[in-house]
Image (cartoon, rainbow, N blue to C red; front, top):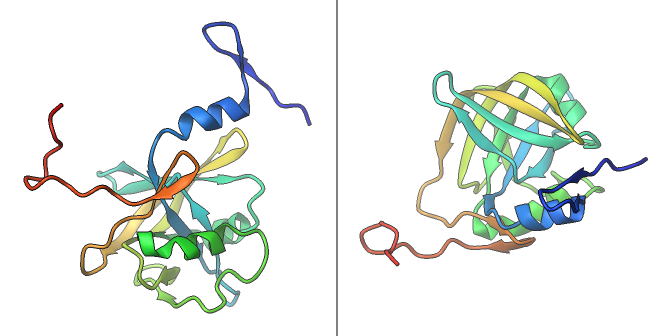
Length: 182
């Protein structure tokens, strides 16, 4: 399989490793996308590309590898729950990123209210959706979900953040909540 590369403005090749390095400077949160087809075991995967897409209508989006073993079950189910992870859930992130084993073994969850997709215990927030559309996106698929229900956990846990190929915690905010001026 050959990898297509583009050229940058200086004429150098835009290699996938360079793209990953530069885009790794954009901090993202981590979600676990889960679903369950009727009568089958639940499926899910770790996702750092979950984003809000539209307020009217209420839409979210995520990207999933074309090679994902969880995606076919999510697609057939036609619904999913995006579970936004807390900093304390880094081990759960790793579990759902693994390529083998039963990802749900020993994981506490219950059916989400609107779609019945697995809602993971302790998640910072959850967004329960039906699949609205799926688009090709290079070596990924871009899924658009219509929000059916959502919520946040009690308390104020820190989110699990991913930056430069490592996990991080959010920095404390200033007393006013505003960003400090340089």
